[in-house]
Amino acid sequence: MVVMNDFSEFKQKFRHFSKLCTEDYLIRYANKGLYKRALKELDQGVQVQYTWNTASVSCQLSEGIECTLYATLDEWQCSCPSENICKHVLIAILYDQRQQITENSDMGEDIVEVAQVAKPSADIPTSSPSALDLKPSSADFADPDTIKEYELQTQDKFHQINESERLDYGLQSHAPKGHVRFRWMLEADLTPILKSYTSTMVEEVVFRLRYPEDIQIMEDTLLTVLLKSQKIEVSFTEEPQLTKALCKLKQTAGKMAKLEALLRYRMYHGVDDTDALSVRAYEPKFSLQTIHECRDMLAGMLRTGLARLPQSYNAQLETLAIAAHSGNLPEIERSLRGIQGELQLFFKRHVRFSMQTMLDRISKLYLALEVLEQGEIPVRQQSQLVGSFRSKYFTVPSLHLYGLGADSWETRSGFRGITYYFYCFDDGQIYTYSDVRAVYYEDQQFSFAEHYAAFTPWLPSLTFSQFTGEEVQFQSVKVNEERRISSGDGAKLTILPRTGVTEVHFGEYLLDIPAALEREPDSIDLFTEPKERLALIEVARITEHSFNKQTQDLILMVENTEGARLPLTLPYSSDWQSMINRLESGFGSQKLEHFYAFVRIETKRISPISFLKGQTLLSLKLDSSSGRMGRFGRR
Image (spheres, one colour):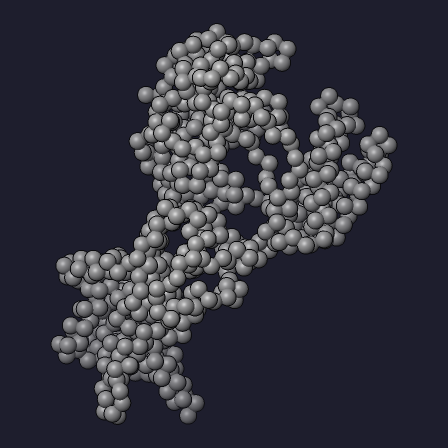
């Protein structure tokens, strides 16, 4: 008796599911041609015999094919060779729909509403092929004309929103034109929706939302949002559950696409989800006890004073740094080790010790500890103070980048590398890619010339020396919070015709000489990462060049058309001795007029990285030493 009840319960559940599988729903899950083939064969007399089980139904088609279905299209089996959803699955569902209509008609009930139900059941599948990618399955080939006609009809129904033309689209309110059925997409509380997402998943979606995306919206029995540049389509049902949305991407990728599509739709209509997303995306968990211990130790240091400080404090700092690491406080650990390094210099009476640097480090850490201890700031800012052990890279749909130059460098801690700089047309920010190696081992070397001439990981025929002077388009590239580009697999790189430098709008990065000379004083800011200040300066000519033997710096004096002068300083290194000699002698530089200097603005100097003119670019440390100074170009 219990088994019979189970059969009856599943039969009722499945028949409710099949009744709610509308034409729009089935077409989005399969395609238009497959749907029409299923209807055609039903009209030709194909019949289905159902055998009910406790959690499935066996469907025997009169043509000999057998299918096993459940109360969802996320799972099914068919004896045909198709790996995708086939016409036999659709026939089994549509045949049951017709049976229900016949039964209701015999009972004298109104069948119109039954045939036109628009919402999916509680077990609607979580993924679907795109409505704009109407390719028939391997087992059933649809009429190409039918597919083309449906594609055109579908595209006509989409309402396009170009976010790139409306950079503040998230702040604008657009009254929804759709039916009341989809109001939940704007009125739903995000908190319960986000519970099924990990903080890392939400953080990545929030990261994607920084970048503009052209979206299209279509409404029929479903509300479909198309993310154009990603070529991702998500169809929402009227049931207020994100899990019921349809998306062709599987598993985690599909789950994140649904959330992104929902959030972009809400942003378009002026819904601000910042607070809800911040709470879920940034959930810092750390040891308050370690915070107390660090604060007490720093307070003791300040009371005692450096002059009377015993050397045992170095051991205390090391112990607390280890505790901070165990307490999930990576930024606190880095700050403690920074103070420890300065303290070691002090005890050794080293010339590199700076009292100002020591005070800045202690002040910033003490303030951060006090703020974390009070716990009265938003979780996003808490997360910034806590930091992370490893930088997280997230995939962005596309980046349109303009090469600004490359700079070679070496650190005292034993690292050498080349950093490539790019201006991004999409968000008006500067992105970097760094090729870095540790050289503190005896057998490790890093040749700037060899690495500069090496091929890029994204386009095997493109060298880094060419890459830095190009205008490029990345697709599906990974970047982190500091806008550093990853060399990981999956990114696609396309070379574009390079725009003349004077035609590019660099925004806040374009400075005149008086503005560049107004150096900003150093300040303690807890919630922004210290970053190098980069700028492009319009230069009329180089008027002087000299080498300061005392500081071992090469000084290039430049001026603009108004006669304002600016010294550009290049520190000496044996690695770019050839470049120093060429610039000091004036070789090639005397011919340079009316160009842009891409520079790094530091506290006591302004260092040039590259010169740009027209469509050409010259990276000073890397190109000048290769003999390119005379012709100022790379082609």
